[in-house]
Length: 114
Ligand code: 5GP
Ligand code: ZN
Image (tube, rainbow, N blue to C red; front, side):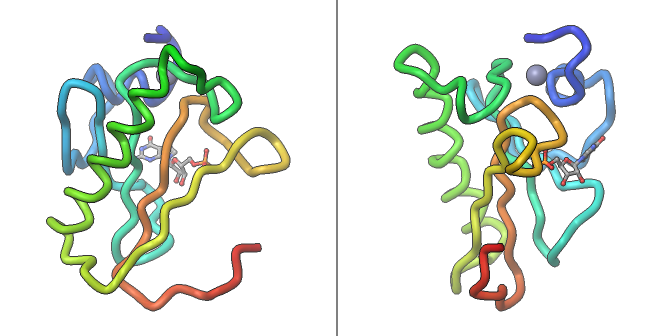
């Protein structure tokens, strides 16, 4: 874990969040600036900076994030579908350098990605 990383601090409980799910590998909480009725950030409980840093040693955390996404989506009533987004790096629009997946839904989303 990284001492000063915002999401590491949220995982440690040093910064409050609206938690929706937690297990050994994953922490999930509502985005502070939601873009849709459901907008949840699904975060590995280890400091992986971005998608570029996923490797054979830490990819179990990514798999666990997606297992969690399926459970959270069901709990949130997203039976008609949803979108999972990862922003990577400057061109990808990543603002918090701790890998996270946006789980977005609760409305019919635009078919456009960009
Ligand atoms: P990114 O742009 O890095 O893909 O996404 C970062 C997300 O974190 C943004 O959607 C932003 O609203 C959210 N965010 C930033 N700071 C906080 C915070 O302190 N608490 C919560 N819950 N979300 C945050
Ligand atoms: Zn971190």
